[in-house]
Length: 259
Image 1 (cartoon, helix red, strand yellow):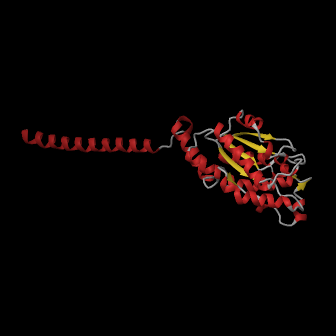
Image 2: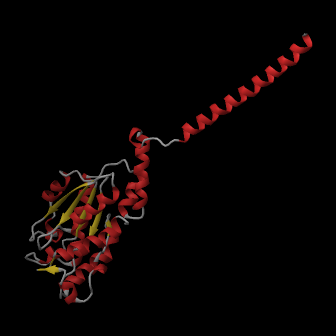
Image 3: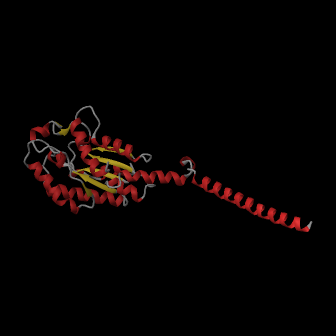
């Protein structure tokens, strides 16, 4: 009898060990399968940040992309500041509107708000006083995109000399950064016009001295036709029409946000 029971107990023990091993392996497989299932992005702030971080891959080479990639949680407010060249001479959006529409499409789910501050045609860099500083500060910008106002300098009672125009801009930007220490500033030249002699010299002086200004500078003139007649098709009374606004916006976007 004892000889019969002992082998039976051994068999039961072996069977128990095998069953326990199989159960343990099934549990491990279940845990591994659960951990591999994707999580709903809407339920995790960490996943949301990951989505935003991934979106920066689309524009990491542009000026704005570099800024956002370094801190995509920071909120930005942009102010475009300049003359009537910032709005179309026809019924259509100005280049700042085109730029921001395209930018917000590319950086979604992020959104950047903006304002456009236009100064009078007869106001030049010589008259960039506290009034305009206050107008800009009230918008609380983190980024300012400013036009050089070179055409407005020519519409003054006394034409502003090229170097004086640059010096006036320098003073203006110094005042802005004093009031807004963390602000980023981009300067762009006013649009090209048709036949002119003194105006190109003013822009050339701006290009030569832009490095002395504590701002980033983007010269979009290379995007405009060199041929005067061809260039005139983008202008109306010396200011960009709808086609000119589109051209200016496209050139700026290549610098601003690499799409």
